[in-house]
Length: 363
Image 1 (cartoon, rainbow, N blue to C red):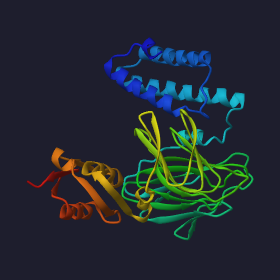
Image 2 (cartoon, helix red, strand yellow; image 1 turned 180 degrees about the horizontal axis):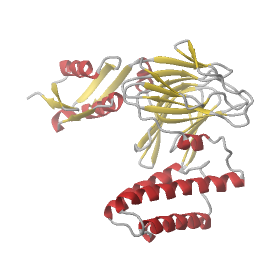
Image 3 (spheres, helix red, strand yellow; image 1 turned 30 degrees about the horizontal axis):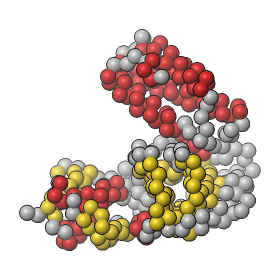
Image 4 (cartoon, rainbow, N blue to C red; image 1 turned 30 degrees about the vertical axis):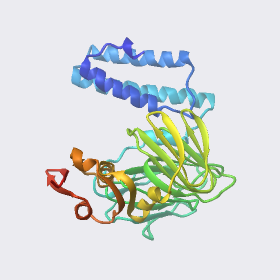
């Protein structure tokens, strides 16, 4: 259907990105609209873009496309809400409609009254009581949530590169939130269900509640549990996503169906391919203690993970990138000290040029 829309190359590239994002984002309960409804909505999008393209200059066109996509999103949710497939409390709907916060240095906690709290400390502890009252490092902040509200009100936590946070939800579930992660959650859960949204990496210890299953929603997979501990890595825009189970049992729902994991099993979804295998869970969860454990990993993979964690660009030359390494790194240190530690144990050197760290083998 995309071919029905005539766009020049720059417009086509940006429109294709919007199209891919829309296709990925609008996965409501893993169901698809009937073909006639999809076709009708798509034609509405094309018609809107064409009509505005005639009136606006090229640099304004993509604003029209974005507006059309927003209209299409609203219409899709209208179809599903009308048919009873979701309700207004759907966590994906909330996550898409909340304002995104792009924070570079401080942890941001956004309450349901849109009050934003900037937290400068690292490894901060944020805790919600059963009544929805919020504490940061045992200091009360904000107002308590309405316990009998007809619709849920959502908070969001945004953790920037180089920082980690421990978040305790109102049901007692604990989340270790890694650097570069966004979590959306209600101040108080429904009595019969618990849902949160994750974009990034989180380790969870879910409080058991037989009457209220716990679901972690992401843009590509969902994890359903009643009480267990596991790690989930699912970043928007990245090809690889994973779930590692430490104890208990989880059910993971992907685009291809549902599967159940046993302790010490990892589900990896990469470029549409799914694989379950046994792993050493410590390699995937020690980051919550500030430790990066690696075994038989190429140096370029280690640097990619450090780059993601610290939010800095790190590149390896071909020779250094292929070095196979074992060991552990202390993520509580700043990046320069971590790189110095690597340079003492591996035959490499590093230098900083502007905002880029360059790793090279010693010759």
